[in-house]
Length: 429
Ligand code: EPZ
Image (cartoon, rainbow, N blue to C red):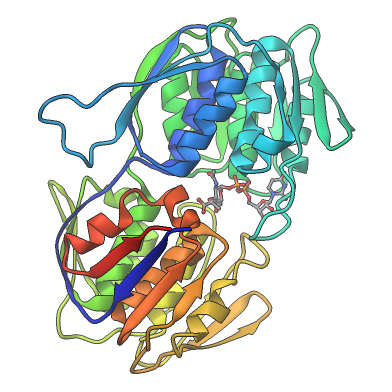
């Protein structure tokens, strides 16, 4: 298994191109199942999760063509996928595929909406808490689906097609909102989703669905209105930039010091995280090409942060912020409210000499003046990248094991960081 070796202590200087958002690319690819015409997606990141979803969609009979590189294309530019779900040959998503990636469960919505049936394996356990799918099932039942659970599979049918309804989510759920949106796009009549997730990736998917002929208004607000249509057509859509990748590199720069241009980043997608970074002592400048992050001279100030649905501080940046706060001058407090048990990085950060104590949902981080490199590994991708951030500022060598998780969510991580002066290399095998 590949590992990443990092020797800490270098400041970061240069430019990092921001890739397309993983968490938009995945539902956008799944949305292609809604139409028998081709959906063309630009700026799709080259990630293990994207490759896996290509396999999963292939199992349903979807043809995917990845456009080759054109002369002048920069290697960092995302790929263009031509996705054609002309013939859906199988409405079952099997356990061995769904269990590898939770988001693939979401195929249930377009399969049910277009084919009026779907049989999808329950996604199973996950390293960041129990993560149930009860709210996704509730939304589909509201739209008229009949659902049963059989031998680990969710079996759903809607013989006469789905029907518009009011879906009120008792808690904000990104997965629930994606599923409700995709299913309602082809349901008969009007659907209202209230207490909808407002994450930018929801808006990106709604924009793409509208280009395909859907009638969706209000995406990005807690109330989304969908007038169902009989058919969706082909379209072309560019995946929005990855706000979590942006925030991750911004935290890396705040950690090491230096100055880096995050090219293509959109500040409005992560304002809450940028505000926290400013409080922590980083200088954030928005310019035409994206965001410039610098920390020169000043130390890292401690912060108190609670994760929350968008536009709050994202849970997907919690581990990275914790890594940064291990070097703050004083005590920081980070409260995780979205996922139970999303603190696996705490023990691994301790291997660098970090001082972190946990009390329920809240971590208290007492900043230390020095971290020391160590062999580490983590079991989810954001936790893994928090170890990279710590390693960049630690004295000596760190070996990050199990980097499979990094490859799921960070495109060319070691290339992007080494281009800015980090000593980081992938060791194969
Ligand atoms: C999405 O997960 C993201 N994944 C996650 O990113 C992200 O952390 C999360 O949203 C929150 O922003 C993708 O977009 C592929 P939820 P999702 O439904 O949709 C509970 C990463 O690192 N819930 O908003 O699964 C759930 O347990 C990943 O890229 C139910 O109780 O998250 C959680 O506590 C990790 N019942 C809360 O809602 C349900 O039926 C929010 O989950 C569904 C969810």
